[in-house]
Image (tube, rainbow, N blue to C red; front, side, top):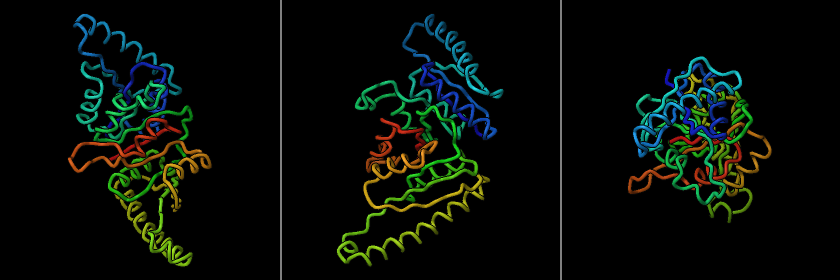
Amino acid sequence: MSPIIVASDLSPESDLAISRACMLAGRLGAPLIALHTVDNHLSLALQDKACAEARVLLEKQFERCPGGTADVQIVIQRGPVAETILRAASECAAQLLILGRHHQRNPELFVGTTLERVSRLSSVPVLLVASESSSYDNGLLALDFSTCASEALRCAAMLLQGGKLHALHMCNPPLGARLAGPAAREAFMVERQETLSYLLEDEMETLDLIGTPRPDTELKMRSGELRALLELEIAQIHPGFIALGSHSRSSMGEALLGSLALALLREPPCDVLVAR
């Protein structure tokens, strides 16, 4: 089975990430790799010292992890932090990359952090751990049936292992339907609901094919601004995590984070799963 990677900078925030990684590795029966990166701009002597100290501190982090995990590989590498994490995830074909939240208190300083760069460029789903709650029986999915949203659905189902998935789709009727009156708006919503239900069933069949338990899925269609709708839904259902696609390519082919993904990673209301 493909491993889970948790990247630790040895901070209290990464304590939470390691705790979540232990829980998920146990739930999925997956091998776990704990990765710490040492700055290669240091002298060789200081790098050697930092590597030795990091291994000890990582071992202590796992000792503090409730329940722990017997199947963990501690890896200390040297190099630029974001690039080293991305390379490790790619080389071992990780199924999930787990990080703690960034340290900047000012959300405007988020761009350029390791978390932002890894989330923007990672080829595997990235899970930001922001909440002390470890229950993943209940998840929220921002669903638009883009390719990356479908990947987010599959990864969310993997984490839930048969739990409850609230799939939220923002659906604002076009101007013509709005001007035509309530009956036209209602007819549009009914038609869209049927289409989405068929598409969602296709995704469930894909889960069957890859051996992932189907979540107990509730499809919700709402009109309005997606960020506000998500915040309302989070306040009502208290999900263990929110999953969404990254909407990751510009017309120039540069990797980008969508505005919603960027906003949630800047100020996470709970754990955030971003997939592409």
